[in-house]
Image (cartoon, rainbow, N blue to C red; front, side):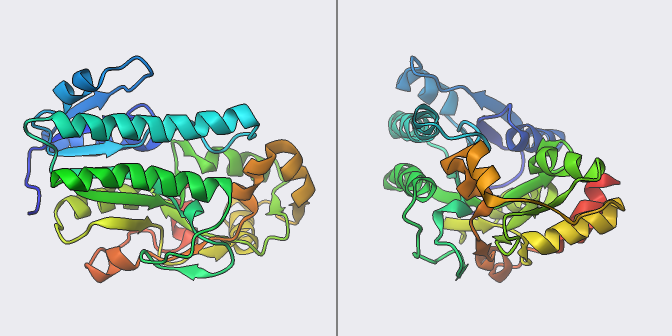
Length: 290
């Protein structure tokens, strides 16, 4: 069934970029927004109390992926996603009135590099990020056993005025030292925050959409193409290059996030009639820097 107006929406990870923008997006529509905090000592029962009679649960929990990955940081990346999702599903299990729809975050990092993917692709990479996403989705999928519609939101790189990837990308270009990362040949699958918010609402109203959904623009592009567009729109040089070894030195294993090629298409959204406001990177960038 489709979900109607005036919803009770619970968001785990409400203080992050996507969570805060979702709250901003759904609040004026007279919905009730509940923030769920899940810590080590949070009981399943207390989470279940907050989830009672919620229409939608949105799980965005997780320490930022854009950081150097030491072994201890990888443990944080894992536990902040898997342990939190496990608690949320365990709480759903004991709710009397369970959420109808459970959005649980994932990422295009699940996919194998250097080949094109739609939402149904099972060609997964064999690296830490992909295995993390696979375990994360498996944990969320358990909610299906309680008659909850589960959507795994496989996010591409999220672009917004208020932060996210643009915080890291724009400063070097504004200073005139922007350029490609590594070879620049790697494909970047991305989405403008406004399209992400509209896609969440669209899925709420489209009961046939479930399982993995690629939250990416229909037009991925190479890092080199992206670099040229940044130089053009900002009217700054874009011929510098950050060598791959330097990115690996800074981010360690986390360099995969920047250097791996992910060519991903939002087939499910398009087949169900969703239209993107920002299909092309140049249009998205112009809106962000306007």
